[in-house]
Image 1: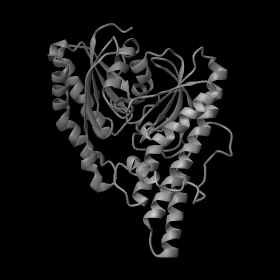
Image 2 (image 1 turned 45 degrees about the vertical axis):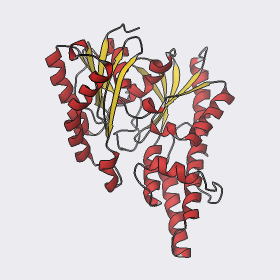
Image 3 (image 1 turned 120 degrees about the vertical axis):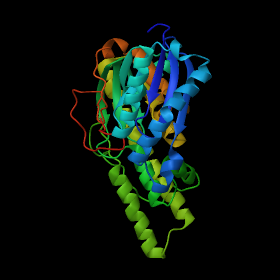
Image 4 (image 1 turned 30 degrees about the vertical axis):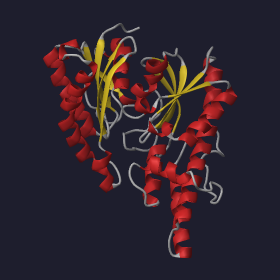
Length: 360
């Protein structure tokens, strides 16, 4: 174990400002997240300039609240871990600069953390599972399968070639006239829809491998919507429900099949004694997708471990824990903001930029 020292985590990579205090015994002493959805909703997506300004204005308040929740004074902080990438440059700079000033004032170590490593190590924080395990990260900006071999050792088995699932959900929500963020709105609309009414594609299922694609699915839905509007002069509520249900079912089919392939590859190459599929990222909260992943994992003989919602979406507790786990590797790492920062540096970059930078 990393020990009983207390780490302050800071997260500001996209549209959540977060601070948390976590100790080396896997105890979350406090966790504060200030969301920005109301600020970005009028624009239908995250506006980087607005996000960066909000982070700069809220980070100190966020840390103060985290200390109050934990009942601690700043002097109790033994180390600080801050998200240094990947993400929106303005938000990353806000967090890194704030962390540097605070660490200097407290005279404590400061560790740069990869946001994706925070998600990837969350199962270690919540359940203390052993390495190696398979991680599926599905969020607004990322979608990839990772073999997590150690605190700072990751091997990418597959990733999206374009849109991440969360991006696709947000874009579909805009196409259907729903609000932002789009994921919960599409899921709610889909509950009363017919997923079989429209023949939407399942991209890349006819090709071998684990890589995914969601951009073509979104485009197919737009074309179907436009055809309906042209044929009947508008879009009925029932049309929206069926389109949402069809889209969600297609995403579930793609993720389910790609997960099945990833599980087979992982088991063949690592032969874990107690195989685990861990899932993190905001899209993991979607019940239909979660059910599909649980079913695939059970069939393959894997335990499915889905992060609780508070730790699946962007938060600082995962950053603090990643800092504690990676302290030895990150002690001399350069503290710079990196809008693109893949976990598996040996893997070829994937196509697509995304809300949080490089896909993988």
